[in-house]
Image 1: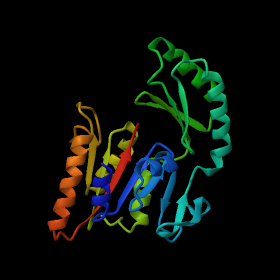
Image 2: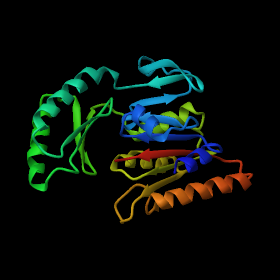
Image 3: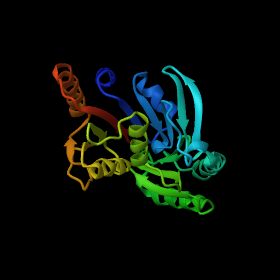
Length: 251
């Protein structure tokens, strides 16, 4: 899969948006020709651009492999509270076998895939009890994971819009965004593309489900085949429209 992503990124601006921390995703993917957004888009590393007045306090200029790059972190003020929450959750859940607390920089994941079914309600209650003391955070549930995020108006959809704007790809008349995702949190990005009226929101799922995506692939093997065909098509194509490929990686 890494080779396929590397190949497709040669022809199309490519970014990866994940719920995990940006550093972890960069370590997993190990590609320097893609852009990265971690923590559900709350930690974006992208090229410099003219800064809007409302966003200036969230930007930090950093040296990178592509020259100077900008870190965009709209939830930076929540970092101290996030570390407090992690400590409390680790203490409260340490006796529940299989529970795992993951620090994803600007959000927290409580994994319960390995938790016994009879222990799940106890885990859920302990997490909710901790979060009652932190009204500035939201608690939601994904695939075998509870997710804790700051209550700010920012999600993978906003991250997609930010990346398209930053990379000079916000004009819907000559850019077709393509977003591939398999997680509930990717629905925000699917919605953004549908509202643009141009692009390809693609869900990865082997079973029918309610979604804002317009297209589907069954599993990662079909994603791989699709990317390889996309690269081959671009090699032989003279299309004037530019395709921006954005990946949403769930859990």
